[in-house]
Amino acid sequence: MRLKLYRAATVPEAMALVRRELGAEALILGTRRVVDGVEITAALEPREARPLETSGRGQAAALVYHAVPDRLRGALSFGDFPTALAGALPFGTLPFGDAPLLLTGPPGAGKTLTVVRLATRMVLRGQKPMVVAADGNKAGATEQLRAFTRLLGLTMTVADEPLTLARALAQREENTPVLIDAPGSNPFDPAESDALRALISAVGARVAVVLPAGLDPAEAADTATAYADAGAEFLVATRLDVARRLGGIVAAAEAARLILTEAGIGPNAADGLVPMTPDFLAARLLRTGNLRHAA
Image 1 (tube, rainbow, N blue to C red):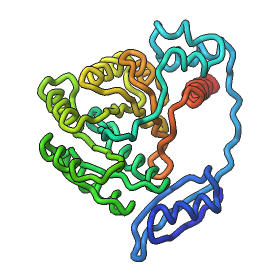
Image 2: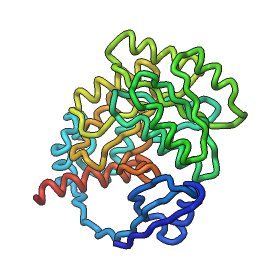
Image 3: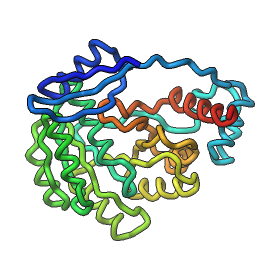
């Protein structure tokens, strides 16, 4: 493993140094603030290619291992795996247009870190998003988000009520993307669902649900459907680096018709989020299943 320390005045400058020397495959091991800016620890480790079983038998075994619902297994067990997934599940990208993007989900799903990752990606591409903390109930949530946005050179706005949220967004500059970190909520609680709908309605937000991998498929499907009923359209899957079974994510997307957009694959803000494509999901399903059967 090649390990190196990079220092620069800002996160984008430090990341540019990392990518220039180590390339796009570099792993970000840590980011911290120092007296004269930020310090990033990065590493580069060659990855050994793992052969994947792509036959119908291999696909069927992987689907059973991941507890993918029975109603989907027949359509996904044979033929080209990515093509089958693309036909059974909706895939797409998160919208960053005129409407703000609000991220919601159960408590502890990883919403705040996902907001940070999306903001980091935008900053690295030369954009400066408006970041709004709408979670006034979780202890430390606002402070955590403020610390990250400070590192990115962004200003964070706190607005945890529909009226204050609408007022805050009325002040944004034209064409500025908006990321809203909504409170963790119980989608089965009518009062909490009504509060979420009020936030969404106040600013006409598009909504992405953040769900961790590893959930029971039936529970994940019910949870996703409840969020879809509240107005969610997109799905961000987190904790793919620690979860062994991904049937819950598949079940959630299929049951609620939520568009699969991003996958959380590690703890880092700079490179811990990747696009969720049919090819990516197929590789993850097959790889994890093969590792299990080889054990």
